[in-house]
Length: 66
View 1 (cartoon, rainbow, N blue to C red):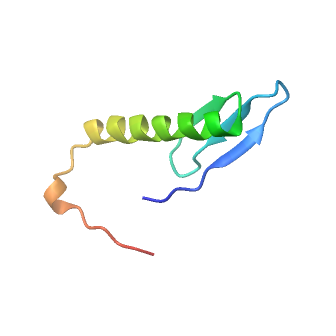
View 2: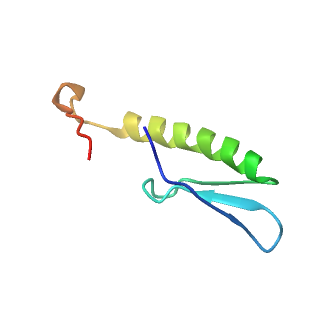
């Protein structure tokens, strides 16, 4: 899975990371590399939580590439 991530340095010097395609999926780090590692973990957690909330039968899933 490929996702776009926005990384910006805030006024306190921390790097913040956000995944626009995953509402509320945010993280930060003291360096750009830390922020990238932390957002990967946040993405995994976000996907696990959303999967656990799913009531859709996985047999009905269809994957498409755009």
